[in-house]
Image (cartoon, rainbow, N blue to C red; front, side):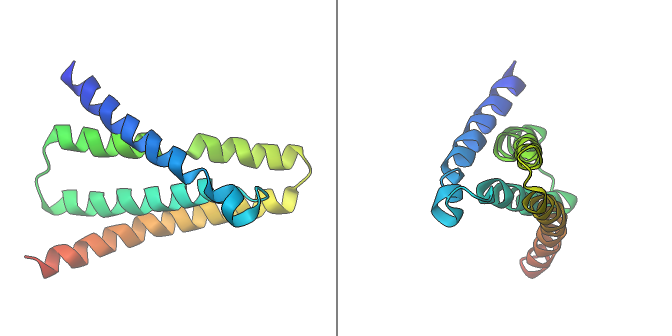
Length: 128
């Protein structure tokens, strides 16, 4: 039961952070491009890569891992939203924007996981 509470609390925090990022769409692109989903996917990918890199070198308790990876990052990242927004762009005939969104999201998010992992390794070596 405790694991569910830990994941649920982390998920609530991640969902709130995701909601706060939602205003970026209209602030940066007048709602034309789903920038907040892109930012969330990339920053979530950077965070998961960074944290995973730390977990390779430091013993992180299982409940902390549940809280961070499944809870916070699970509530924060928005791959299903990305998929729906890309589908809606294609449905609306905005094929170019849909393709740009898909390519940027995948390339930047995978790159961010790699960057986060490398950054964590560098920092761990510096503070060892």
